[in-house]
Every structure is written in C-alpha cells, then in structure tokens.
Length: 101
Length: 101
DNA sequence: CAGTTATATAACCGTCAAGGCATGTACGGG
DNA sequence: CCCGTACATGCCTTGACGGTTATATAACTG
Image (cartoon, rainbow over all chains, first blue to last red; front, top):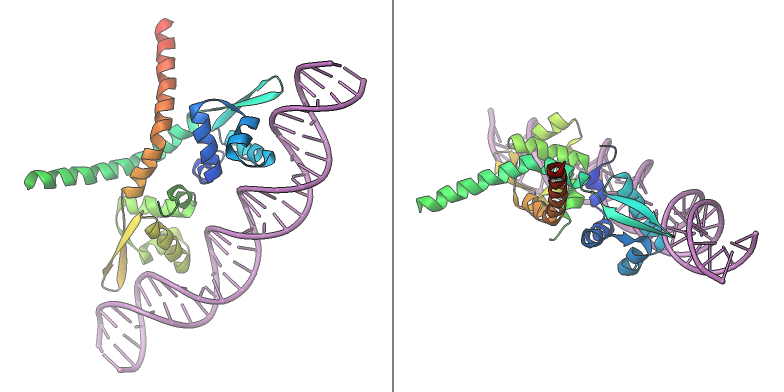
C-alpha cells in the first residue's frame, strides 16, 4: 500500500466525507456546504482520500464530482480478517458455554 | 465510544502489538523484546490500547500479561459493514457483466 | 524488610498534520 | 477575450502525539 489506509480513516472529518459519498456522488461545493468546513480544508482531505484510493473524481463542467472506490475498504476488511477469526472463536466458546447450561 | 478506535489503530506500532497478541498473550517485557522499543513507549501504547478496549491485562506475579479483546474489532467491522454492501454491489455488477459476455 | 525485577507515570522535546487565509489555476458564460 | 465560479495549492500557526530519560510504584525474593 502506498499510504496507510487506516491512518487516512483516523481523521473524523474524512470519515464524514466517506459517509456522504456512500450515499451519493458529491461535488466539492456540496461537501463544503454539508460539512460546514472551509473549502480548502475539504479539498485537502479529498486529496488525501484520493491518494489513498478511497475516492476518485471526474470533471463535470466546472465541478469536480467525487465518488467512493471500494479498493481500500476491501484492504481494511482483509486486515481485519484474522482478528475476525479470533472473535469468532470467542463466539464459539460462548455458544458451547450456553449449550452446557 | 469513549475513544476513537480507528485512530488508535492508525499507529503502526500499536498494530504490531496487536499482531503479536493475536498469536498469544504477552507480558510487557516480551513485547519490549520483540518490538525493539523502549519499555515506556510500549507501556504507553498498551495504555492507549487498554483504554480503547483492544486489550486487557492480568497480573501474574510481577508480570502483567496482556491479551486481545474482540470488542473494538467487532465495532470496526460494524463500521465497515455499509461500505461492504457497497463493494458487494460492485461485485454483483461485475458478475452480471461477465455473464453477459 | 531490603534489594531487585517488572511495569507505570512524569517531564520534556521534536515532528507532523489539520485548519485558516491568501493566492493560483481551470473552465464556461456573456 | 474577460470575468466569475469552482476548485487546488502554498504558507503559517497551533495542538496533538510518539519517543526518550528519569523517576515512582508494585510485587516477588532471600
């Protein structure tokens, strides 16, 4: 991975942007309006998200439309997988315990 | 959530600690040895992980044994869920495309 | 209970990243 | 073409965070 996907997600504002984009594509201006943040700040976060592969942009007239890209989310899911196995073991143990009682 | 679980995971050293603990419980000294980091640094990371619920500790003689706790991992998985739906839609679209060809 | 081992905390420092303002750039409309 | 709109970039300040050294606390050991 070129940049650290999890570190990118650590920023709450960036997660808010992703939540917005999960619902629909958005222009930068749209995001500025809904996030109540300065336009440069939003653009900078979008740059970080873009370089980490979380979003892509296309130019539509004088607007830039941003959309989600699934790749890094899948990478995060893959990172989580071994831990998921762990908590499934916990669940199994709990089930066995419940069956015994 | 009291603390931001994703921000806690943003630190590479903390992820290394979690990777170690995924394999087995470890004392602080064990972690210091395998991570090649000062003992205070490790203790501070463990404190952050503890307060975020990623690990718990028990006292065994003069050692403190740390172990993973699944809770925050499950929370992260839950956060990821709506995005997982998104990339599954992508997969569905890809499958339809392949069927058509 | 004095010394030693294992871990936690304190104080300090350097770095880095997020935000604001000012400015640059690109694109369209008149 | 030139102006206005939409967005990006540069610069600066500030606050949060990770690391180190030094010190405090806790628990076993003889």
